[in-house]
Image (cartoon, rainbow, N blue to C red; front, side):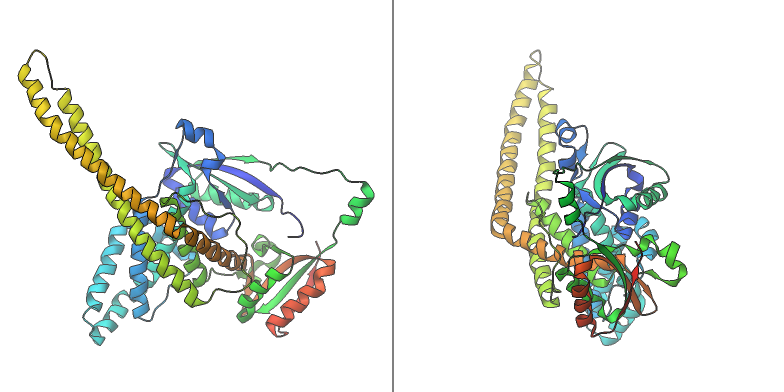
Length: 444
């Protein structure tokens, strides 16, 4: 980038009841970059003052359900549909049980293979399933984001970076979504400056030019990838939509591709976390779009790995509960023993022996399952990290579109570039749009 965008670090404390609504609205605005709370508040986590949020079993079920519903709607010739703002009420009223029942019902009908049944399923369930596919992906992203957060009995804490220019919008979003049940702490990033003579500083100063481009919508994908070859800052037009542009333009809606990439990225995050691995931080936007075949290949491999991992984790969770029950029974039995009543000591001895055998068996099973997880980590860890780089790199490019606006079939994007890069920028955009664009300079 040419110039560093002024950033603020924020730590948000929000009542648990409003967390999903807050995250949904922040995600819709693409305002923040989340920080892992374990890195931001390590001392509080270590002391147990706050508890990191762990991967939820709900997330496992949602990931499985997404795969099932995607196969169903694909067989019906449908695709995810709807505007993002239409889903807020659907998310607040979402029931995993109802979603699973709907998918199971549609799947049962489709197994008959009767063409008239297929049309009936499409008519009766098609729209619901297409919308549910998007809802599930949004909820999956929300649940994955929570893994970077921590909680107390009533409050969830998360940390993030955001552009200083978006601070007011950030506060407004959280205030509305939480009904005022929040607190925010801010921290200015530490800046280390090296002193240089005044005349040299003047020589280093860049003269920036703001250019607003008007491009037919069909060229947007080519433009956003081509821009990775030119140093620039993409201006967020949503900040001026309701002042300068008013009703003349509207924000671009998230693309189906972005939903798919976000979902896949979240799933990879969950698998990495389950295997005790950290997601890579050296993510860069891709210069070329990923072929659909490559995305499907990555999706298939991740599905296979997550299925195995989730199965092992489910068994571990079940064994852990059995261990807790056995330990509790052993403790209760031990408390029954009394030297004054010799018979009780005999009973306790007879019961504790088999209990300890059971606990040893449970421990042995848990050790074997943990070894299986370690094997998966060794075999697929590097591949998963590379997948994360690819998918997140494509997602970064897709997210650029959210900073653009649209009027009719023309997309508006505004770029800040150094004066000497203007010709290179114009040449790049001319090439990918086949000359179908106009632009004008915008006063700073």
